[in-house]
Image 1 (cartoon, rainbow, N blue to C red):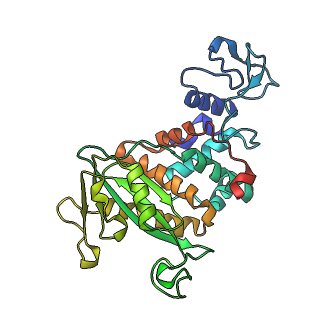
Image 2 (tube, rainbow, N blue to C red; image 1 turned 120 degrees about the vertical axis):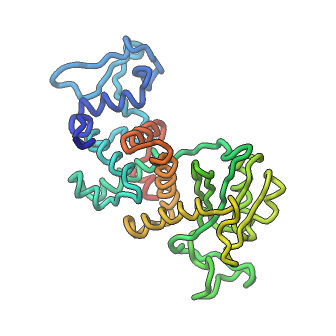
Image 3 (cartoon, rainbow, N blue to C red; image 1 turned 90 degrees about the horizontal axis):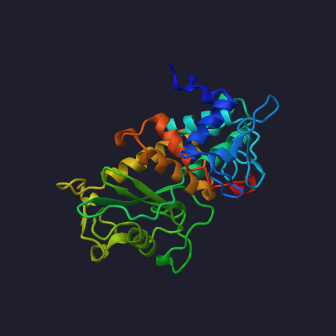
Length: 316
């Protein structure tokens, strides 16, 4: 039996019950006054009552589990949100808004906004340092897409790079940190220079970690901040030396670029950080770490609280 045959993918009542079990694992909580007594946050029953509607006996206000989440004031049925969350979480290289609007029979504008809301739910925002004693963290940078505002060249005294020159003339730089066998954390930066790259590395990696990079100048001097800084020289066709490599980061970039080129095809630079959050989320909750499709969608839905995103904000 397909997982999409589960009741919460088709019934509003079942969808609200499922969402309540995810957002309120210890029972309902009133978003207005904070009352967490299940007996005093009772469900309104009746043929005309809206699905999932509750009343707080303390403040006398009505609420649903969607209040204060990315689903607040959404006119899209909740069971369709569950379908969208599952499709986006289960597709390794992403799921396009055009495909979603055909699958759910909603407008393309609605599907596009749904996807951005779900990406916002997938955003981790964790500040905990990566790595630790005896652990390896790989750092690498890549470029994807073109920016409307080419960066100035230091070699040309602040003037833009020459047209047709090799390198990051008009490309969007991305810096990613990958914990060997673990999580990834990606950043879209204005310029992939030594100052920005080292700030990301120092702020996000535990001092006891071993740092692995290629021979890029961006990471020169990083050995002062970590237990070890070991490199491979890609320009000399050296990709692995013992356990020293950046293959995990390269593998993540491969998945990201295949999805962006093959599925999404176009991404405005102002939205690139949300697409990175999506690919980071799936990588951090992948099957190799014991997280399968249904559990991955549930993890995404746990991130809906406190991340209200309006259409105007998503379009900026």
